[in-house]
Amino acid sequence: MSRAQNVLTDLLAFADIRINGARPWDIQVHDQRLFTRVLASGTLGFGESYMEGWWDCDALDEMCCRAIRAGLEKRFAFRLPNIWALLTAVLANQQTLRRSRKVAGCITI
Image: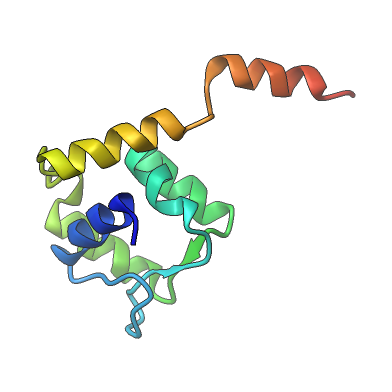
């Protein structure tokens, strides 16, 4: 299990949400890049990765309610393992302004 996955698993536990659990509000992960993306981009990365099919959830509404009630966006503890996982995720994130220009230059209309 990667550091990013450990951090996200611990964070979701505050809301009683499990990774690949059997309950309707548990998250089913289809792409392991989800963990670093969420650490690097926060809730925006979480939503975008859902739209890209990296994860799903049978009871998305219940999962969201649990996450909001638990205040997960405020619970990220700035401990050394979490900071290391965050830095690794940010440094590995290739969604930069320079890279977006390079990709946009490849698009032809």
